Amino acid sequence: MSLSFVTIIPTLLTIFIIIGNSMVIGACYQFSKKNNFTFSFILALSLADIATGIGMAFNLFTRIQEHILLYKIPCILSFEVFFTMALISVNLLACTTFDRFLSICKHEKKKKWNTQKSVRVQICCSYLIGITIGALPFLGLNQWKQGMKCTFKDLYPQELYLLKAFSMFLGFGVSFVLYVFILQKAWRVHSGRHIEVLHTAALRQRNNFILAKLVGIITILNTICWLPYCSIILVFGITNESNTAGYLDFTFLLLGFTNSLINPIVYAWNRRDFRDLWKKWCRCRPQALNSSRNPHSVIFVQNTPSTQVGM
Image (cartoon, rainbow, N blue to C red):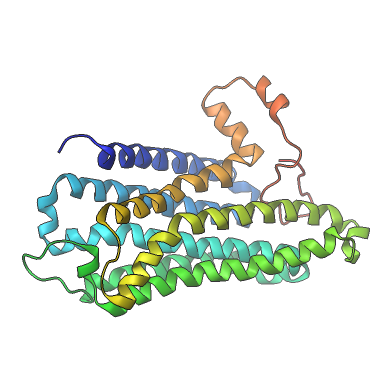
């Protein structure tokens, strides 16, 4: 099979996904002593994104070696690896939005609700839900027949398509609803109708609102990347037939994979200590840091009083 768009673009995307998220994981390991719960969400998300990149590499390999897809397990695996990781990413995004919701709208209850144990439970549940739904086809919930062509629209029963679509849309919906509450609180504070602007909590709220804006951007980008593909799954579940061309399905899938590259860029590169560490690893000149620092690039506010401004 000659090199083409179908092979070159996914290969480059896979390489960038694995390298970018590996750097994020390395940075999280360096900063693990800071005991910031947000690093746990970043680390969990980066692990899922690396697995997505590996799943994309496997999907690309099966497209080149098409005879592998004549067998049931490789066929199902070529679809389930990236769907499972995509669902985990959506769930973790909802957990991150919930963390911002507590910081901004329920700050007095944040330390009680978002403990180290609860954060670990959220991460474990995000992975468990994704892996459980992804494992259903391997446990018999499939329509595989010997000699059939490995196509997504013929592989699963109608109920599984609906379950997959519902689980993805549920994660999007939770993030959207929580972000509406965050925006309402931000508007009240911005318009001067909230008492917190008159006290020392104003600085904390300013940092939280800057982060909330960033979480909103992440939510929008995540939705743009995965919503088209989720819509295709929903169409399969409702009509049990495909209304799109094959190349369009692949384009939507490629768009979803792109989200795994966007996550490390937006989540980590916007944080100053991550940038400084990466520049140190890459042996970049430190003089460039002073001229490029932006006092408003605040992300992942510490849960302790020693919150840093302008990371």
